[in-house]
Amino acid sequence: MKHMKSIAAGIAAMTTLALNSSVQAGTIIGGSSLLTAGYVTQLESWLGEGPLALTNIFTKDVDGTTSADWHNAVDQRGRTISIFEIVTGLPGTQVIGGYNPQSWDASLGTYRVTTADADRTAFIFNLTTGVMQQQCKSTDAFTCGFDDAKLGNRQTYNHINYGPTFGNGNDLYVNSALSDGYSYNYAYGDSVGALGHGSANGLDSDPSDYRWVSIQALETFIIAADIETSAGPTPLPESGALALFGLGLLGLGLMRRRKAVGTVS
Image 1: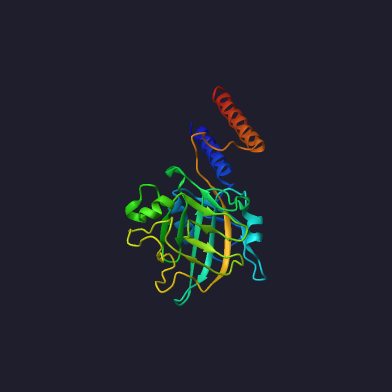
Image 2: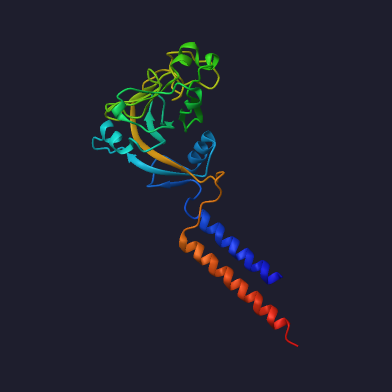
């Protein structure tokens, strides 16, 4: 009996290893100069999912990379997280960005409109200070102000001459040279409802100016999550299934052999 249990445990361990080897917790594929393990954990918390695998599909080049280059890399790639290191009027730098639950698409040339509240799942954030602002819902009059709630359907701005830009106005804007931008309150709300429509929104924590001095670095990642669904565990590849089948046959043979030996007088 103990032998049978040890064989079963070995097979279970190999199955778990095969199922979990494809995605590791907090994986950053392609590298990053901005993301830390702590930042990835924070993003997982805001998204409410994980562990995440973030694949770097764009990194700003110091030699003149433009918004057109960025769109060529990120358009039609599914949901993304874009982050940038900014210089403000305060000492040091800050890492801010936004989560887009839909594909970027420069062919739209305008806003990505999300009429239903259920589709307004984008958010903008400051990883340095831990601030996160969600896309306004139609009922968010207190948090966002009446004007912002009406305009909260403008999730992102998709134009070839704009970098990763969120909201109406815009709430988070990056210029065509990926070198400058600003944050302002229009379609994304602050966490306590203290800031009204058309105000410097506190995302970059510099109350003196809504514009930034510069963007030092910019990266965009596509997202995968290692989450079990109602469909059950991920199927093993054919080679893995054959290996486990072989182990099962081996265990069955050993058990029969032990039984045969035990019956000899």
